Length: 282
Image 1 (cartoon, helix red, strand yellow):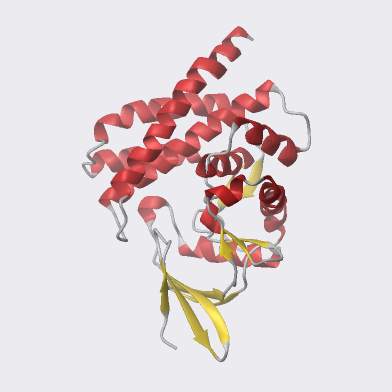
Image 2: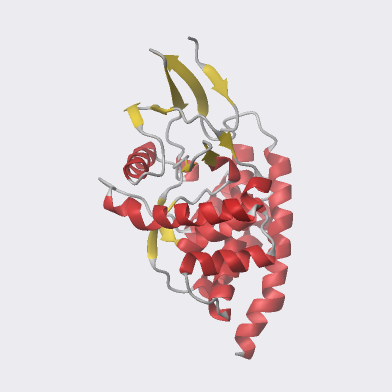
């Protein structure tokens, strides 16, 4: 059976292949240094995620290609993530990613610190003549303020790309896929990314924090979370702006950049108005 192209990948070419009556998912993609994507890291995270019971088994890997068992199921959209019943399934999955993958991880492993990513993207946008290069000082300045607000963090092993499409429901359980950006970082980044990528409302975000941390949520945690959520929106915006220059697939990055920048600026404005003033008053 000829490989069947699958849509949805913005940094890879994905295919479904059938062989010997079995279906496989094949991902084709080299390192993408401009985005910090290193395939050795993706492979190690994918194998550890399978060992932790979160992700499909890796059957074969070689430079530029990885073959996994194909999961028959429904890929989530934003509305799926926003359903309370699904959120109650997602939070334990994310917590297991953070807490259980390290026991299975082998070899060198990357760190994903969103504020470094933002600074590096800023250099790339200026160096490569982005149409948005003039905005970089504003973005980096905002990121520096947000980094101070986040403060010290407890390291977990994060997925760092919790888009709705990275959850698959096979009718019995959820799978978490796509480990391109996996690495050590803060749980708050995954939680903020999950909320912003699926546009959870304020009540859902409050529930999310309490369910994940299993403690009552105080203002200090809310403030640190709000700062990291802003950073996740800025990172997604700058990821798209860099991709405009270094595009690998046919996708309307310009519109995606504009959409995410609008959401970031609104979140940044709200953060400055609410949380930074609260900290000052406290």
